[in-house]
Amino acid sequence: MQVLSFASACSKIPDDVLVTLRADVAEWQGSGLSALELPFTGKAFADIKALAEHDLRALLDLPDGYHILFLQGGASAQFAFLPMNLLGNASHCDYVDSGHWSRRAIAAAQPYGDVRVIAAGDGHTLPDPEEWDRSPDAAYCHYTTNETADGLQFQTFPEAVDVPLVADMTADFLTRSIPVERFDLIYASAQKNLGAAGLTLVIVHQSLLGRARRGTPAPFDYRRQADAKSRVNTPPTFAVLVASRMLAWLRTQGGLAAAQARNEAKSAKIYAEIDGSFYRCPASPSCRSSINACFHLPDPALDLMFVEEAQVQGLYHLRGHPDVGGVRASLYNAVSETAVDTLASFMSDFKRRRG
Ligand SMILES: Cc1ncc(COP(=O)(O)O)c(C=O)c1O
Image (cartoon, rainbow, N blue to C red; front, side, top):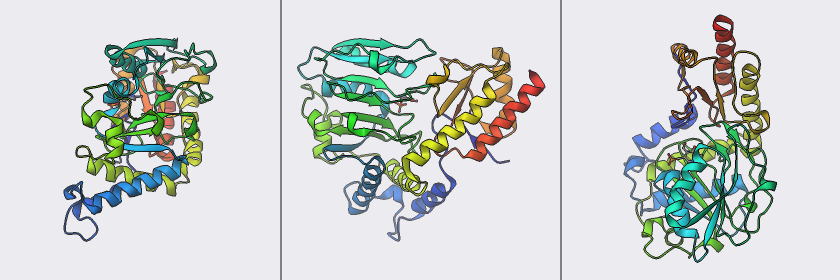
């Protein structure tokens, strides 16, 4: 039976990319070494990283002045690295509370300074960026573009703000077009749209470098990592290769605008099944995520039955986030339209049988 994964992470990797990676692991381009054995200081890895960076810059149309850092520790580590690197002499930083992950970011920043929550959502809607109570003297303003656990996504990006704008894009990075010039720092773990866990990308404008507080460990210091081309310590070499293969694949698929169109079409099919009398979606339509469709059935026992019966049909990893419950279908770039059609028809059938 074919397994279709709707996992939040680690998520689906395109079959073509997996074929290439199998060959890379067996032997890296006639070198006699596996891709897992390439020294991080050698030319082969430098070339892999350079290609990943080249493709990422092309996909984002990244203006000059930004560094791309290939780091370890996940987005959760960035939650602390941000205030360590960016607070400088400022007295406070601004955060938007939009759901589960932004609250984790807020909690992690609090030990480092005064964290002001300048706007908050209510679990169903997101606070309009026009109405965030931003302070002009904040060190930076942080928000989470897509709340993976709650199924909420900001549909538009804030206009340029007067303090450095920082975004956790872990879930929706590269799933849609991004006006990257409005951001001073973007970070994302790789295990959703860039392949393997273990790599975190940080895209940081050079104007933010050199502000790290005293005592910041070198691997966590953006300036030192930028100067060392992400080699202050050993980068997650294999995860960088996987990311490089994923980026090349995304370019062959038409880039970000095409990905956005596909993801909107896929999620529309799932929301069409949700809307009606049986399934319930906590996110209001104007804030629904195009990549994490979260919903509930009439009671938790039915949620469980749905997830278990789906798995018997080959539809895997549909359980909601543990703190939220319900069902979650993650529809990242590599989840095919066919997989989504199969899920939509299972939803329709389940509703007919159990509704
Ligand atoms: C929006 C968001 N931020 C942060 C994280 C945490 O990422 P990591 O597990 O790589 O630390 C996640 C994980 O799902 C996420 O979805």
